[in-house]
Image (cartoon, rainbow, N blue to C red; front, side, top):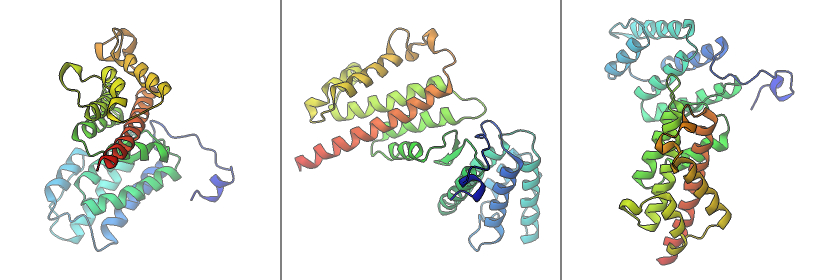
Length: 279
């Protein structure tokens, strides 16, 4: 729950996009320190020494072989200082991703919850999804993408994951290719349902055959996604390197990622009902 000042409108700080306040950095690093030195289940700097050493070297921190608890603590304090004192706004987010990547699954899940709570409380424009820090703040949007990433079809999951990673790259985001991957996830889902392969396996063709396979969607929705397919695939579309899509903006990539994820989830639910009815 938000603190008193935010609940009652006294603190109306703008959303922190492409920046990270000192308070945010200190709270994230304090949570990391508490996890590593105030709990029995720690990251285990000794058994996971390679991952930890690489993380600290990448963060520009001198790493000492953790022979004992004191050395481990000194390493952690050195890492904290380096991240908090960094002049680059994204260093704290680099740290979060690297830390989660070398953590155990249980630690990663738990610390994602802790970090996301801090990010929300500090009015950050970023949240953690699938161990990536992404510029999406709405819980419903995060849930939509997360659900699409759990679809039981590798091709769909791969496209959604790539779209998310390309969109979430803070140093070199690739919004054009993120859009391509988002629409490709829908295309893959439609082709799975219709069984289309080869040159016929396009969203434009597959979406028209959904009803032939028991998946009925409203004509307006069919038209909307056919238009989105045109947006990416006509002669000026992003798949053809159209001039209109040079330097596609972040908001387009975000819209496509969320919309395509939602449509994939919608199709999956429809398709599951069809399959259940056949059994």
